[in-house]
Length: 424
Image (cartoon, rainbow, N blue to C red; front, side, top):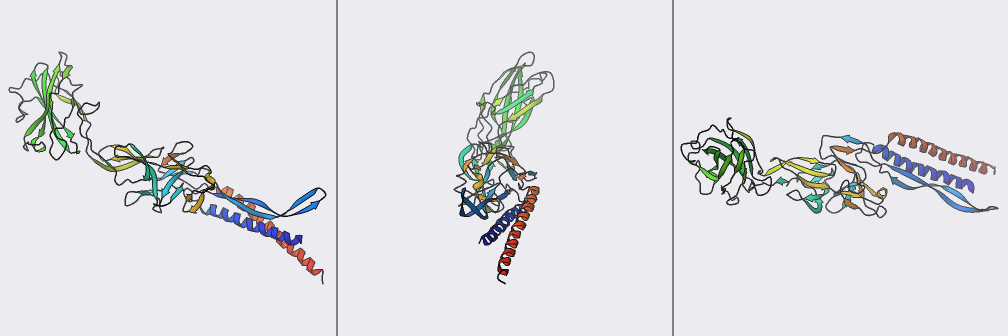
């Protein structure tokens, strides 16, 4: 009987609207969930039988069903935070997580560093990234991002053969100074020199060594320089007695401009297991000799000791740069970003996580900004993309549809009651 079919049509409408309201309820419940992507129910009609008419066969509907629930991956709004490991993707793509066995994908970038130094999410899953070596060069491999073992290796003061290496010392030497009464003597440097300045150089193990450079005038427009290190830091030396490790000459013209300098020796044989007979380059470019008091104009050198990780910085490409206590900054890792041919078909598993499915296609692993991938924003979280206004409007529409389907059942029941009453 068609009345019974109408009852079942109403029942299918109630069932479909109930499922749709469940989808809406889930969206509204997650309006404050970081990285949440809303869904929508997609309906399809049901056909049960055909009837013959003069115009041909016609299909009679049997109601409605929820054909699918589609995930909506449009961009959510952003919230700024004070946590540098809070990250968001501005555009398409997913952060990659692993529990050691399975791989998962998420838009929720609330990451933190665990007790072992790994970057993880709230569930303890490891954040995947492209790794860099101790020199700050990419290794070409992927893996869990670990920040605890990140240290900046030391760099010995260079030998000057490569641009930018060694000691760079620019001074003015007072042309009015007299030539000392005796030749320079490392055992009595102060009495046999006219001017001195101290600097720190580093051996191959990153140990600092105080070096004092003495300048003594030998004639008009001619000077010598001598670099001394305490003997306790030099193999075979005596603590408290300076050992000359480098020296040379400086020459000037009658205007006080330097015409040249020489490095006649450079041999720093530091104790402690460092590289033996270390050569340190000295460059006196910019040094002058005019009739004003001797003074240091500039002093730099390229060595530094080892450093511990002090802070991190994350750029728009997802590169995590470590800033170390010795002033060195180098890349540590770069977030892996995954993309899919059909991201709306990813499988939701809860906890703001997705899994790859046959319908979504295989993940393509790359970096932020590559291809269609979005950029990374640090100290930022992507909020839920649920629009409450839209959800409430849809809820009202489905509520009315639910009520209308219930009226079909009520009307069908009244008609059946009339049929039963015909027997009386």
